[in-house]
Amino acid sequence: MKYHDEIMHRRTFAIISHPDAGKTTLTEKFLLFGGAIQVAGAVKSNKIKKSATSDFMEIERQRGISVATSVMSFEYKGIQINLLDTPGHKDFSEDTFRTLTAVDSVILVVDSVNGVEEQTRRLMEVTRMRDTPVIVFINKMDRDGKNRFDLLEEIEKELSIALHPMTWPINSGKDFKGVYNLYDQNIRLFTANTKAEEEDTLNITDINDPVLDQKIGAADAAVLREDVELVDGVNGALNVADYLAAKVSPVFFGSAINNFGVKEMLDTFIRIAPPPKSRETTKRTVDAEEDKLSGFIFKIHANLDPKHRDRIAFFRVCSGKFERNKYYHHVRLDKELRFSNPYSFMARDKSIIQDAYAGDVVGLFDTGNFKIGDTLTEGEDFYFTGIPSFSPELFKEVVNKDPMKTKQLEKGLLQLTDEGVAQLFTQFGGTKKIVGCVGELQFEVIQYRLLHEYGASVEFRALPFYKACWLTSRDAKKLDEFSKFKLANTGEDKDGNLVYLAQSEWFLNTEITNNPDIEFHFSSEIH
Ligand code: G4P
Image (cartoon, rainbow, N blue to C red):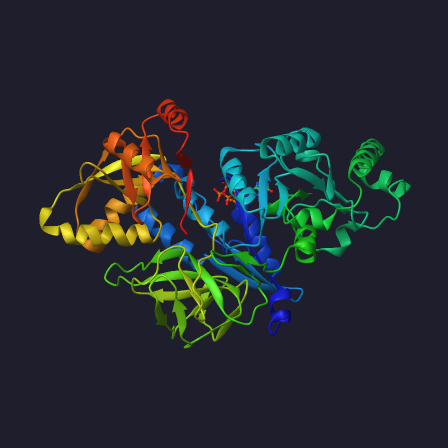
């Protein structure tokens, strides 16, 4: 319990959204509130513009930005906030999924015009796997969005979550007048690009106060009263325990670009969002308040300078205290390592740190010791569970264009897949190396990086696979038989786990039905 106070004042979270919903804009407002930046426009979008998917300079630029903004730490009202960035482009969604294993809660941004979009759905599936508490921010209320009730219903239905409005909007689009705070029972009147905080707040103790009619007009006041009665009647006060158990999500309405409704959410966030929690490992539950250090690598970033192969491994501290220059146990390699230049991230600057606590993310220089999921402890052997690898959606065979560089190619493929850029499978019945990715863009990144960082020239040949499933069975013989019969469709992943590569959904379902003794998994827990 030595570090109780340190842990209790930390909040580690990520903002997730479909591209363009307003994640970057909201991040920037948070940093402004936290005093980590002084001017708007300081946070660059990490988006790759759709038109530039083949532009390598754009990819490099994106990598540069995403390292700089990978973790943004700032203080707000005495709380240390660690905001973990997630890539905006869907081709990098696997990176996002893994980052979500390192946070304790998330804020989901939904565009009030577009409602629930594809990427929102996928991201929410991941948060549900881990029962991560979610706060929802409905953005762009200054635009003519969907009807507020319809929107809430759509989010509840599509994302299978129960919502609990904390603020309630008065109109939208050009008629947007502000939000009623159901918790504080006051009204914040909308002003575009508002900087002031207090003077825009209309303090009323009773929603029937005639001042309301004067301020927003009798018709809108009447609608608001009706809405509030309905919403309050259904919901009552937020049950924080339900939020923490990921059973209910508080909802805020606002406009990130106008810095409207953001402070309400941030204030609620620091009041209710969970501090670092206990986490499951392969051996036991690790309590965040334990004295001994433990944590895991959830992201690895290659050095931007191709002449230096060293990388940055992002280490999430789960318990104890991380100290500079102290030896820690690398479980997979059974090796003691120490770090002389660990750094923390303050907005866009990196700085060397002396120590860090549960909830913090430390950047470790790595010369090839780490892969995603690796655990550091003070001697105990375990891995944190729930760091999955999802089935890729595109599969391509690696064609070596320069046999003289075979060794470099193998090394490059191993290192890039350690970083989590893609997954590598080796097909049985041949030695075909198959790279699986979530998006086309990743193949371009791999091809480019293999050439520029390892001197290996490759081409990719598309393969007609639809999904990779990890296979397990109580009966080892059944697995053996299955792989013998399906040589062209089975192989192993980099860690030697048996994988079935299905050509289509129909084939997959047929095999599932025909092989009741075999379990087909759609994600592999790395440990
Ligand atoms: P993302 O990180 O989720 O992808 O979204 P981002 O913040 O970059 O916002 C996407 C677009 O939506 C941006 O416009 C941004 O200015 C706009 N936006 C964000 N919040 C609001 C809001 O509350 N109201 C309105 N009306 N727009 C908002 P863009 O034109 O795509 O950006 P840019 O090309 O000007 O950089």
